[in-house]
Length: 57
Image (cartoon, rainbow, N blue to C red; front, side, top):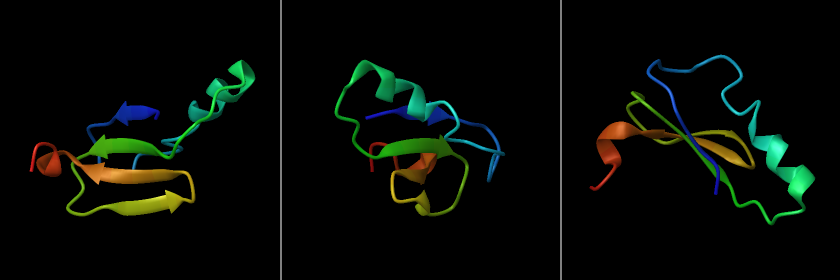
């Protein structure tokens, strides 16, 4: 499961590096972009913005 941490809300191209994992023929589950958003937001079918304040909640 790829995870990326960003400090801004709605970063530009937040999932651009997630596809790098495909070259290793690994099963890749949906990824998370952890940032300061107020709610969980789908970017596409494989990537979601996940609010930092929900970690450990």
